Length: 299
Image (cartoon, rainbow, N blue to C red):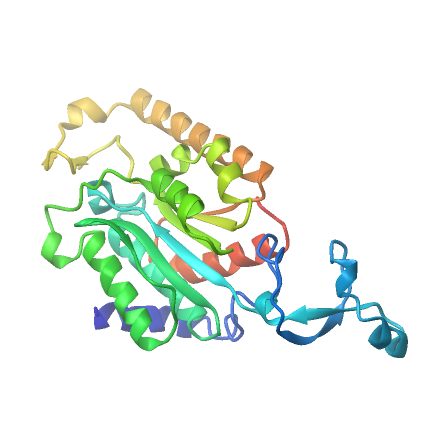
């Protein structure tokens, strides 16, 4: 476990302790409550879409409110982190920060907050030795193992300059999750602009049948301007090639088109997206993302 990273995650959270005093997953999400277990837990007031077979008529008669039985399965979430990897994650964000570090810290903050409750979580990514899918679990040891796995897979210290060149991107990982993981989940995909553009409508239809999907996009460094570094060829590119204002404007328009298209697709399937470029955006961004998705606001 990278304890420097753990200290950083705790520091992020402590700065916003008043906002994250309750679990970010408290309350019900959209897709994962279609099934139910036989373990009765408590009662809550009826909301549109509830199964009328769950109405407790005796309790409703006593209280004057329409109450439905809530089961244990409704209060426990399964969170799957789908983490993009590959050489591209060794690049920087548009704010000049380390993309791999930002990806790991973002996932780590969510996992740390989830770990405070009864929810279980797992990681799916393309690791150094191929597909990596951890068990679902919770607790301190599980958190440390998950973060250690993520650190090795997206460019930890021992991989500096080499990265991972696995064939599966976020699209293939999400497809694998939809086809092979037989439980209802909140899927948190951590990717970048290329990954966002790869999540098409056919994949969205497959993923959200039984799951909620939240997408966190790490805003890539600009290709134009000075100090452009090619992570594939491990060299700086000539400013004569990428320094023109016309090319910079074309890149800006192309980037806006990618995100506009993605937001249109995501809105159609009630998928919420968050763009991050700096570490100080992680906590407020995550809180906003989960609140928007819970309340059906997918802007």
